[in-house]
Length: 50
Image (cartoon, rainbow, N blue to C red):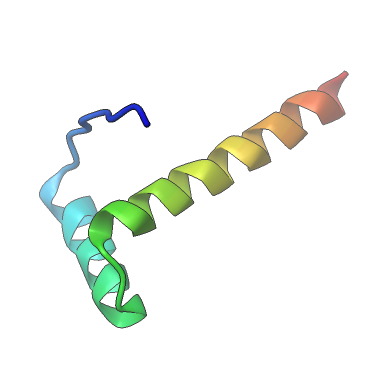
């Protein structure tokens, strides 16, 4: 698996930490899931424009 490093502003980092805490998941998992969902939504949007 390839790893990437991203920079988040303090407010965004706090948000994802809180979501992870509520979900009892690591922050990395929550961020990965959020990015994967966003990628899917953007792909569907791009396909719909064609």
